Image (cartoon, rainbow, N blue to C red; front, side):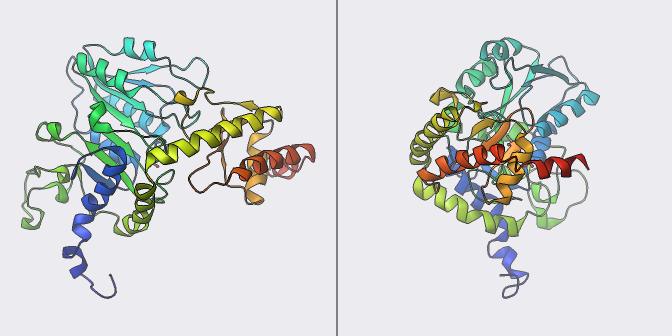
Length: 352
Ligand SMILES: Cc1ncc(COP(=O)(O)O)c(C=O)c1O
């Protein structure tokens, strides 16, 4: 497009891609048309949400959890400079977040409740219905980071009633980096004016008006500068595939494979650092083994695609394309690496 259409490509689709691509994600997560806008990443989306809110009044609490994604926590703590009070509900076991304690922390002084639908470290699924119900009872807004659930755990954000949702495409959506997304409940649009803004959030960007922003009356009011067009092109194919298969089917296969994987892991004598109950577990199984980081480096060297999170373990994430036999293969490989001490070369590298 760039080489054949040049500047005309903008009019022929590129300007609209922030929402036309967003709509493809909307179908996966239960948002309506024109309710999802594309951004480079979650950190930007969360910052945009934060910039809509005023923490100088009595209602200035942000209730969140210690297992939320670090970017989100960094952003909320930076808002303490603006008067925000950050209440972080701790996890007692490093895997789950105690729902009752989270609900109790939400009160009339709470402006924003921020949770991850599925915890990135432990794969724990949170009860977004209960959290949203409680937040709305006391007049608070809710943002869910759905990065670790969208595309593998069915969800319908409009039915839950979420006010905001953020996510990205590097995981289950198979879309790659640079394709984050932001959902904002339609009913809130007219009340929110993000301070993190730019010319594309203006009602008539090509008028190039000087002075304060006159916000667009659609989801574009949450955009800022030129969108990441190449990243959106790359990401589209992933959304098409996930939409074609359907998240319900992906989830059914995922439950079967993660349950089998847990059996194999436990038969091998390794510990699981994720929930055992199917209804509490997302698509990832977290395996806690000695020298986990070095073992992961060796697994990657041997073409087993997984990753490691400190304090959690090796994250193994079967998706729609994963074959059953791969589950046995990775656990067998972990065993071999440990038995042969093949991880030691990486320990030495780390020590240097
Ligand atoms: C729950 C969650 N939020 C956010 C991110 C990434 O944030 P960003 O898109 O800002 O890089 C990740 C990625 O690992 C994640 O798991």
